[in-house]
Length: 395
Image 1 (cartoon, rainbow, N blue to C red):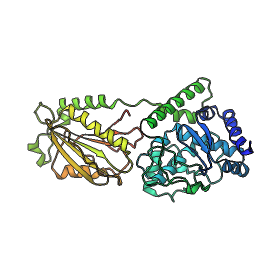
Image 2 (cartoon, rainbow, N blue to C red):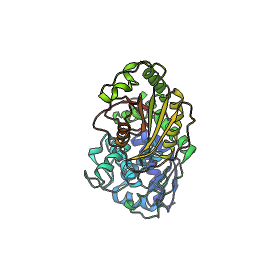
Image 3 (tube, rainbow, N blue to C red):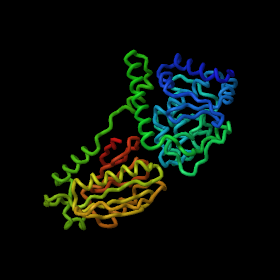
């Protein structure tokens, strides 16, 4: 057996001894040598690696660097990076995930190979947070260097049109994602399995007093139960119906700038539901958002407006309480700007009982909070808005 085959086995054994958290989770990944992989890669089931490259890493940076690479792959699974890209731009998403993982590894006592992507400005931030900052500031700012430790071509929700790995061992050339393999129900199952593994291993180590504080914080964030959105929304809408202070407002006084509560107790007049169709929202999330429209419509409103928006309003559908939810033509994929929806509502002279915005929260917000209430329904990994109430989708 060639010595570079021994390198992986030795490194994984050392990882178990060095850090039980990463070492135990690493055992869930089936090792698979693959010459087509330029560096190392995982889809949540296997850990593929180029034998010659791994040996080169060992010779150049020592066995500690190989141990770190295995832990790096484990973090991508444990943090859900493998399944959460959606329609995000592959290069920025890959950089964001490596930034997030490498900072955690360093904080956990791992020695990163020279040139590994690290940026102190992103400490404590999720991959989604870092992605939003990269979108805003660009990849060349803040000392960011485009050198990745691994290949992300096996990740699910791969970006259309990407190129697969060609076997090039230059990690900087391995950053464009190709066709993913962990998709649909398989991806969802794997993601849940890894979440359960993470919690299980962390709980065992914590009971022994062996879980580092840095990892404890991360585990708590991932394991935190999500708010049962549908029940919260139903309760929220019921309160709107019963409390004059939250509308609907009497239209006879709106033109004078006075938003007085209506005395009509037969339900609320108009609800606006805005759906984020920007590039940061995956197809799965958009489908979930569309499904939520039915739930919202069933709660009751005289008129329901459904708006699709990325950086501009891409579609506006209006239906009455008696109408069936129509088939929607989804457009988007651009940047994220929440302002066009609020601007359109103002231009139409509307004063909705509530505006419900389904999004991940990454985008440009209006400078001024509107007079009507706003409910943000966010994906699990989201950025908090400057105003309104936030509930989280339990998916």
